[in-house]
Image 1 (cartoon, rainbow, N blue to C red):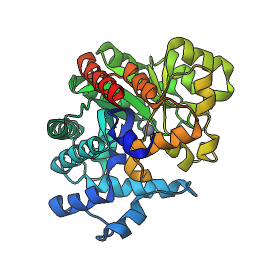
Image 2: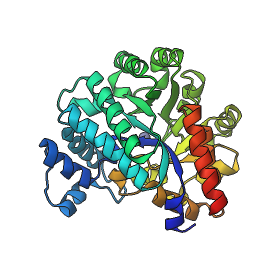
Image 3: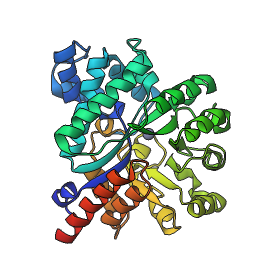
Image 4: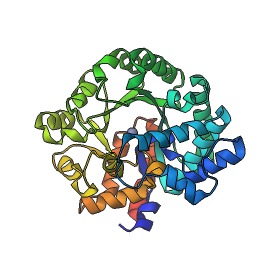
Length: 338
Ligand SMILES: [Zn+2]
């Protein structure tokens, strides 16, 4: 499929971070409207400090960029604006169904914004974006492993209070020092409130964390999870349980989880019968779009059926079945015309 055709396809994305949607353009708009601090006023110079185009040489390269983004969230109004713009950019790329995830802790930390106010601002901003574009945007609340189990529990309580705009929870952050089983109580609480769970696990190492996320935390999807590729027992588990991997090729390459995009294990995972959804993760940070990412996936996996991949994503969506059904119908209508 050429890029224009991919762009015109009504697409679904399950794994995209709000913080990773802040393009240099949006950052400059936030500086203009809310006095948010930016290190450069020139869009090209700002892009140079915000966008990562090559594999990381150090963790600091990504931390400094996220620090810059956190400082842009100067007020709930700024968060609301960013959330609305994130939806507009997604819709402009032809996305009709987007599960957008955000961390109340990260979004609020630079300016001490209360987490409740952050959640409200993201809900309002995305709703405004939905009204303007027609894109459906259910939300996922992220807790970081580094916060520890207590704050994770508190964050998931906040997620439960913000249903039905929030449909799921996610655990992200440092896998080295924080095994997933420590967060079981928080996930039990989220699930008991009808929230669905996804967990960033097995991205660079620790494939066994994928099993723990599924068996102990009740994850229905896994963020990345690509390290299971060399563990037939875990491939079987994921396939048998129908757990979808949320895969992001460029993201995996930039952080060094794969040496080159061409060496991404996606093809082997798909061949093994693992459900794979295709995602951008942090499109603004990597200077990509879901469309450009799908084009890349098609190059890596010749014969990849992009329409089927979109249907698969919708089959594993956490959102309201009526909204998901509408997105499925839009994709079907497009595919019968294309
Ligand atoms: Zn992610």
